[in-house]
Amino acid sequence: MTKVDPRNGYAYFELGNISLSQKKEREALVQFQKATPFLPANIELHYEMAKIYYDLKNFEQAKQEFEEVKKINENYKETEKYLKLLEGIKKGGEKGSGYSQDLINLARQEKNFGKKMGYYQRAVEKDPLNAQILSETQSAYQNYFEMSSAYQVAKKYKEAASILEVLLKYYPKNIEIYTKLGDVYISDKSFDKAIKILEQGKRGEENNLELRYVLGKAYMGEKNYKAAAIEFNRVLAQYPNYKDTPQLYRLCIEKLKK
Image (tube, rainbow, N blue to C red):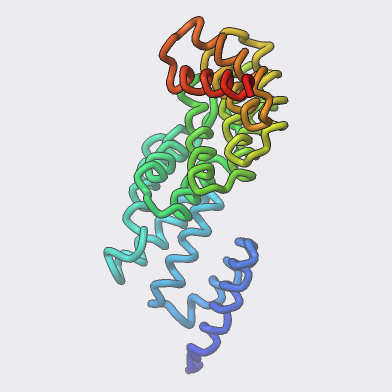
């Protein structure tokens, strides 16, 4: 009878973890599969394999591995969340909206930033701008806006902008994308970029209050108080109490008097 040496299993397991840290999921899976006969009851091994299968959309195998994890420990990490997701996929079909929407719902509930973005990214990065994830409706854009806003709150402005920049290429007539992208640029103090993108958006919808409001703030950032005052004045003409526009307008006028 051949003796099973668990040291071989841990060696393969560590090689798999190295590949995983380098984002080489398929290579990691090969090493983990080699480790399995040596470490049949290793919960972390089953868990990592399950997540890789899930990311590769091999949902049947992912379910089997998560169930193995659950046999060892019912409450291990996010096993139960994944199993619920897999159940939703089974009901709606892999091509249905359950795969992405359930992940997005988890992202909304998650307070840890890293995990939150992980859920969002799994919802979109495997098939970005796919019709199942993003259709040409306002509510569908919201998924991407949420991702961008989460990055913006974390002061990761480059990442926040990159999501909206890609989105704008596909939907160049959506004024809200211009507005939100301009706001991200302002947060990053890239006022010149903000002005450029907001002026482009303004050509598509000159009377958009929010866009003109954000554009006014961008001009203020550039210390172009005259241009800022013009934008704020256009907003006030339509809505006299829009946000803090009256205060910003007065501030611009005071700056111009000096």
